Length: 291
Image 1 (spheres, rainbow, N blue to C red):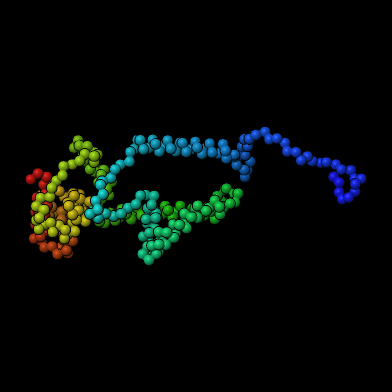
Image 2 (image 1 turned 135 degrees about the horizontal axis):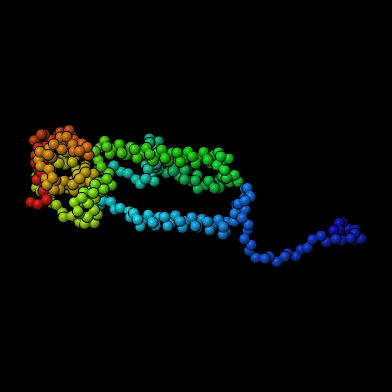
C-alpha cells in the first residue's frame, strides 16, 4: 500500500471492499462438549424446555383428573377458628408472628423485607453475571440460596407444628379432619360421602328459653355458633337425639373424648351458677330433630 507523497511507490491492494453474499441461517453447532460454552438457544435449548414443560403439564392434568380438589365447608363468620394460610405461605405466616415483623414494625414485615427478598431474586441474573456455573465456585450466590431455603423450611415446619399445638390446646379439630370423619361415618351408614346432598334443616327448640342467654354467656357460641349450627365445634341442633341431659352435663364438666375441653370452669367464671348450667344441659337435651 502506498504511504505519503511518493508517487513512484508501487501500490499493492491487500484486501477487497466487496462483501460476500451470505448462505442464509446456519444452525450453530452443539457447544456442550466445550467447557464454558452452551448450546444454541434456538431451537436446541428451547425445544428441550418445551418438552419438559409438556411433561410437567401432563403430570398436573393426570393429578387433577385422578384426585379432584375437595370442596370445604361453607364459611361460617360466627365461628372462632385458628387462621391458617396455604402451605406455600406458611413461612411468611410464621415470620409475621415475630416482634420485629409485627406491631409497630408490621409495614417492615409485610412490605419491606419481602420486597427486598423477592426483588433481590428478580435482580439476581443482572447482579451475578459471572460465567462460572459451578455452585461451589459462586460462594455468595450459593450461600444466599442455601440460607433462603433453610429459612423457608424451618419457618414452614415451625408454623405447622405450632398450629397443631394450638389445636390440641384449644380442643379444636381441623376442618379437613372433620370432613374425613363425616365422610367415613356416612360411608359406614351407606349415605353419600359428599356434602352435595342438602340436609334437612333442624330448628332450634325453645329458642326464647333463658338457657339461650346462658349458652351465649358461657362462650359456647365460639365453637358451636350463635345459631347452634357449629363452626370449630359440631352442630348442636338435634344434639338431644344423641345425648340426654346427664350426658350433656357430663360433657360440660369433663369434656368429650379429648376433642372438647371441659367448659364448666369457663361457665362459672362467666357468672353462671350450677342451676344455670343444669338448666342449660336440660335445654340442650331438648334439641331434637323431630318435635
